[in-house]
Image 1 (cartoon, rainbow, N blue to C red):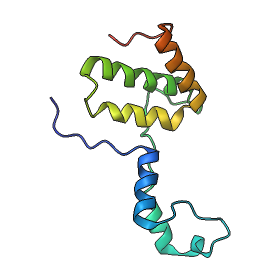
Image 2: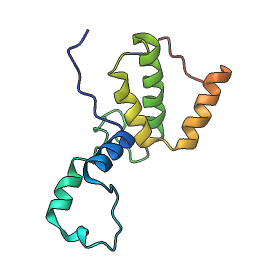
Image 3: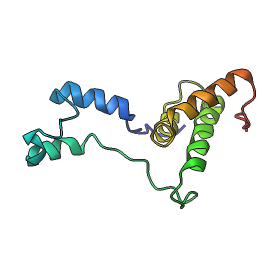
Image 4: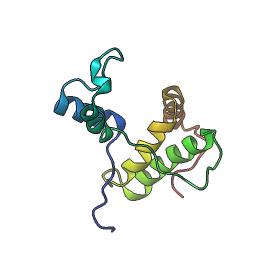
Length: 120
């Protein structure tokens, strides 16, 4: 078992924490806060992007989206539902994948027609 792994929060979790800490999370573009240095320094902790993956050097991210979706479900299947590092794969596929793809893939999983195997 690996040591305690620090998995970054998802975008929704970061947005909720930022909103709780600073009030309003997303500013109006006409707001004078856009020109304040402190505002930009505070917002820096909010942003997170998936790390570079050498398996997917191209600009289009469809394959990367699918691979991380499968990796998340495979991790849950092989390591158990309460294994925390699986959340990393979920954060990455949620950043890359459109919501309607994930909805459709979850429907296919429920029907047993998803094209990938999670037990390997």
